[in-house]
Amino acid sequence: MSPALNETIDTGYQRPRDPVEIWLARQWQHILGFAVGIRENFFGVGGNSLDAARVIDAIMVELGVQLPLNALTEHPTVERLATLLRDHAERLSGPLVAIQDGDGTGPPLFLVHPDNGQVGPYCRLAHALGEEFAVFGIQAVGLYSDAEPRRTVPAMAAAYVDKVQAVRPTGPYLLGGCAIGAAIAYEMAARLDDVRLLAAIDTELLEPLDTGTESWLQQPPRQSDLPRILASWQERDLVPRDVAPEFAARSLRVWRASRDAVRDWRPSPYTEPIDVFGRPPAMALPATVVQRTHECSTDGRLADALRELLG
Image 1 (spheres, one colour):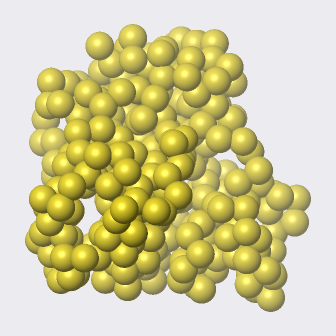
Image 2 (cartoon, one colour):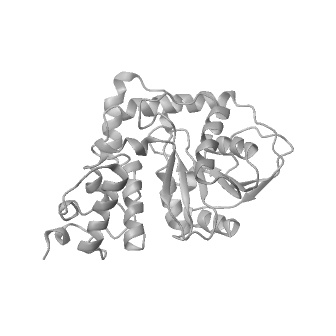
Image 3 (tube, helix red, strand yellow):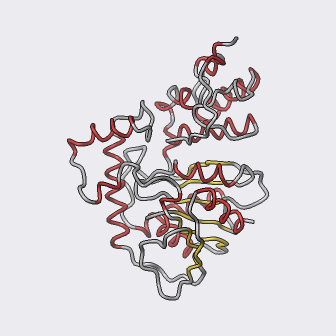
């Protein structure tokens, strides 16, 4: 039996945790024809040597990294292969993150990051929606680079609109987000024509609240706390084991910028409805904005409700 097949095959979907794993998982989905979790064995789920060569070629074309042909044999999961690429993935640090390509029959759904700046939780939602839907995440500037985070909701919205229009110059647009992401998506909608969907999503519908930064509301960490915090995130499988040591400091910087931005935000005029999934967003919207509520108790029901609106 091939050594690659001796690797444990995790049959449950486990979402990507950073842009490198998201990119790799999307490549595997494109090549294999179906979505895989980060710990599923490439060969165990049906990949062959020709498929592996296509993955290696995609890495060279997109990231400029030349891996040997046996790289997938020795690193047969998204999680393990990503460890070879993190030091060469600067181009994946930008705001726009393609999560799922879709089948091209409908417009993509753009989901804006919550307060912690990450878009990994949206991968599970994309998976639940179905492979026919194209989904982009918009992650915070400065989370995976030394760039300074945007400091206001309008500044974030303006920057993200530019990125969205670079890949989709005209509507219709489908926008959404949770926490500060809902506020940013709102401001983006106010700047775009032909917005078909503006969705405010309850964070708890995506993942449990204990994702690493919730306690910061009561007691923001000190710099000296960051190594311990990062180790805790790694132990709880919230971030990869080989994540850059400075990731915790960048996360704190992004989180502070997000909290300050949403605190000072004054919504722009907007005349279209906003669809609210789960609990209403904790933001003061103009009285003229119509909020259409959708009761959702799980991410599966969230996907069902969204699917009806996406068409």
